[in-house]
Length: 172
Image (cartoon, rainbow, N blue to C red):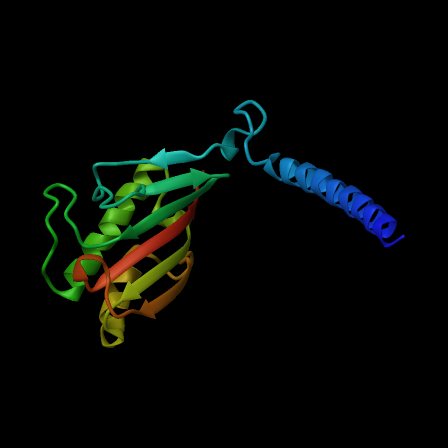
């Protein structure tokens, strides 16, 4: 009798396991739907890579920027001269200007301007330089249309620079 119970139990467990597996496959298969649209149905849902000589080339396995669903996601920019590939070793104001010019190059390549920026993330090594950075930043982003922003002090940045800025922008 004990043997029969284990067979019935095994049979019920197998059925339940099969049932769960079936629905897991159905759910997982449906999750993939909607991620990939054809150009005809929704042309903005295609991931587009932005690359320009007016900003430093990527120094790793990433792109300068990506557009998806009408939004530009720009990688963090540091003070590298795109023409020479050399790292700027100047004042925090000079570094900030070059970083924002590099961002401008990416924005232009995507058909955007500084006014299209929705969000900026500013990473700095020394919060004591905030007011100096902010003065330069204000030259590029006017208060009437300035993006949302956070400024974060970090221990180090790529190539040990003093500032890195990334942005998210609306593509026209």
